[in-house]
Image (cartoon, rainbow, N blue to C red):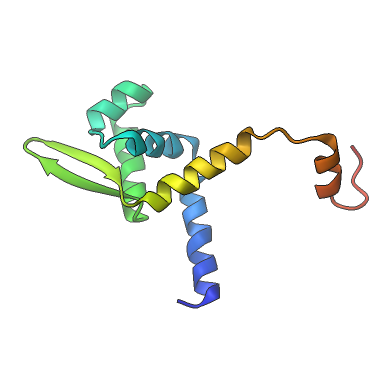
Length: 111
């Protein structure tokens, strides 16, 4: 895979991860495999909405489904997914000082 193809794939990954509900579902599945029913109960989302998000996550290769009798458990496809989410959440929780904000602001931008 070329560097450009890798960048396109990474951008698509972040697009899928760019929805708060999907991140929540992924965090829950990082703890343990979950059924749709469990995810509905924990998140208070509707069953169709949970199923839609799971379909998107499966199509992106982030989630795998495994049948156990009448139930289907959903789990993360690999540990990379959990690391990306954990790092993103940790980064979002870091306080931004005024000095850091000023350093990252475009020139000519006023505070």
